[in-house]
Length: 252
Image (cartoon, rainbow, N blue to C red; front, side, top):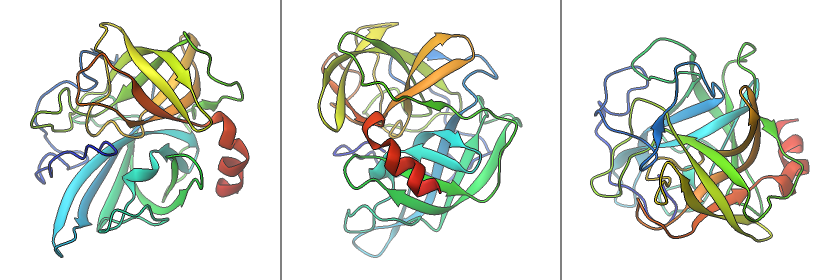
């Protein structure tokens, strides 16, 4: 799911948290994540989201584990049939697959989202899951304002293109550079492996993070919206450094 550029409904077979899916690559012009790395990365699978005509559709988002029972993602990943952000799971079933680099594998955990909290200012939501995960280290939350020209990494389980998009089974990554900072957002441009390395549909909520060395990651923002992918324009991310008190209060 991408804000202002929602992808087409996904067939049920693609959205099974442990089952087979359409083979593809996530993060347009990105790279595969080595098995077991960035285990804080999360795949959110929504089955049976209400539509304005009374029907149901399926979708997906990405996210990151920030506490043993909490996942951070994009606020627009939880919207009712009228497009309003809501503080509850909107689908008949929303699952969080945590710490599973290859969704066809058996590592990590599959949990059910049982509650949602929406940031009042940024396109950020917190999803509470029905199990406590203690053997996967949550990603750290930054207290530092993003800096223009700073390079960050992004991970996601989304598509590689906005044309006939579908979520993928293998976590992907890319690097992007901070181009601008506002009170609620961070502008990002593609950096590596290519200038048009960018998030795609179903990467919404994926983490942008600083990486000082292997095993150390600090969350800067989450995927929010952008042009059709891949692209070399500015991608918009939702900041988290300026909503830390809300994040801590919501989890408490």
